[in-house]
Structure formats: C-alpha cells, structure tokens
Amino acid sequence: MLAYLWVALGGALGSVARFWINGLVIDKTSATFPWGTLVINVTGSFIIGIIGALAIPEGRLDSSSRQFATQFLMIGVCGGYTTFSSFSLQTLNLLRDREWLYAGGNVILSVVLCMIAVWLGWLTGTIFSSAK
Image (cartoon, rainbow, N blue to C red; front, top):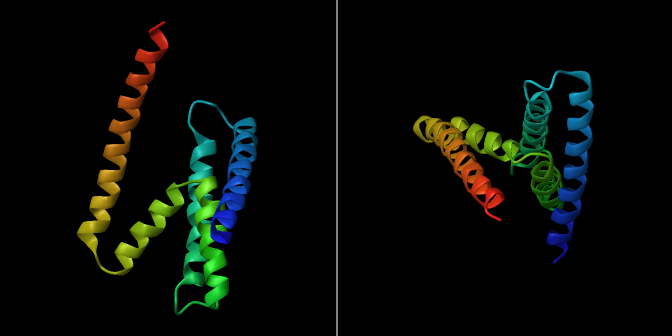
C-alpha cells in the first residue's frame, strides 16, 4: 500500500512541475511550436535516464533505495511530469540490449500509433462537442 502512496505523491509533484515549467517556457518563447512540451519531454527523459542508471541492480543504489527511486521518482515524479521519459528509457534499454528491431519498432509504432490515436480522439471529441 505504501508503494501506491509514493507513486501518487510523486505523480502529484511531477504534474505540478510540468504545469509550472510549461507555463514558464511558454512565457519565454513563441506559442507556435510546443516548446514547453519539448522541454518537459527532454528534461524528463534526462532525469529518468539518471535515475534509471542509478537504479539498475549493478547501479549505486541499494535494494530499498532502488525501490523508492523506482516508485517515487521514476513512476511517480517522472510519470506525472512526462510519460515520454518512460518511453525513452525503455527504448534506451532495448538499444543497450542490442535489440535494434524492437527499439526501432518501439519508436516508429509509438509515434505513428499515438498520432493516429490523438487524431481519432480529436475526431471523437469533436463529435461529442458538436452533439447537443
């Protein structure tokens, strides 16, 4: 049960950080390109990369610290901040394991399928918004 609390608390902190940083970046840049999202995805990927390297069995963290880092920081904070960080770490792990086809497939499928899903979601949303 404590694991759920750590994930929830980390997720709340990550979401608030995302909201704050996105606003900060938007205030400093143009609204034409989604700079805030890009900054969040890149920084989230960088942060989860650091934590992931420390949390692997041969990393610097002991067993209980590894569990906390995984639950609170990786799943909670980084998950609330950006799920792109999880995608990036999983793809890196595939590359580290020399699973080139799976890594490439993960990138291509994630981008293509997510673009199709967001488009279908958009279409569905417009149907619901126009139906009164």
